[in-house]
Amino acid sequence: MWYNTFMKTLFPFSDQEKTSHFATILMQFIKFGIVGATNTLVFLAVYYPLITFGVHYLAANLTAFTLCTLNAYIWNSRFVFKATEIGKPKVAAVVKVYATYALTFTLSSLSMFAMVDIFGISPFIAPIINLLFTTPINFLLIRHWAFRQTEEQTQQAEPARANKTPKSM
Image 1 (cartoon, rainbow, N blue to C red):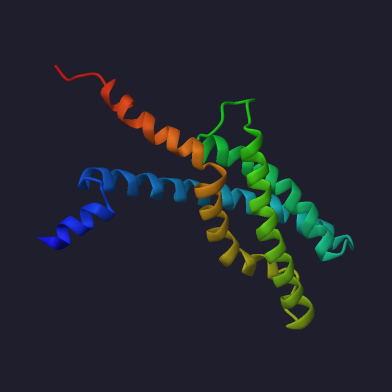
Image 2: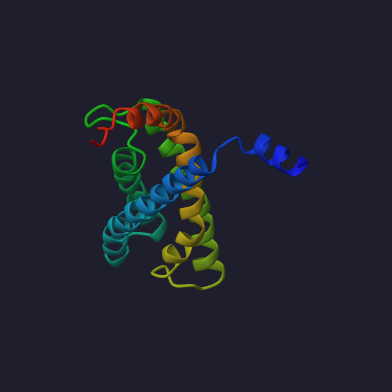
């Protein structure tokens, strides 16, 4: 009995609300993965030609990062978290997305330096290895920091939307 009371205090959601919340997060993660996959292709389409033509791998990484962060903001704000209307970006969200990606860019650059210059891993393979740790970090920070306010507003709007659904006859 005390266990149920304790759990309801920690998690004040009904089973249906828990399922709905989990489904929302899962769908966001799947969409984030889709955006991430396309963003990776954009990154590689910029990065590989630059290093092929002799640009230093860290400079190529910075160039690809800059373009990919803009791409990630646009698709995450509209497709994943639905945080902005077309043409109306939230300045705070843009800054937070760039800050999030700057953090993971720094981690990525340091790990690329270690992998390429210390451990001898190919600069063609290093960015792919980086995805294993930068993707989850980006998702968590973007979901819980960059788009947090908008997400809360979206969750508050869900019950209102549910009440407006047509009633069956």
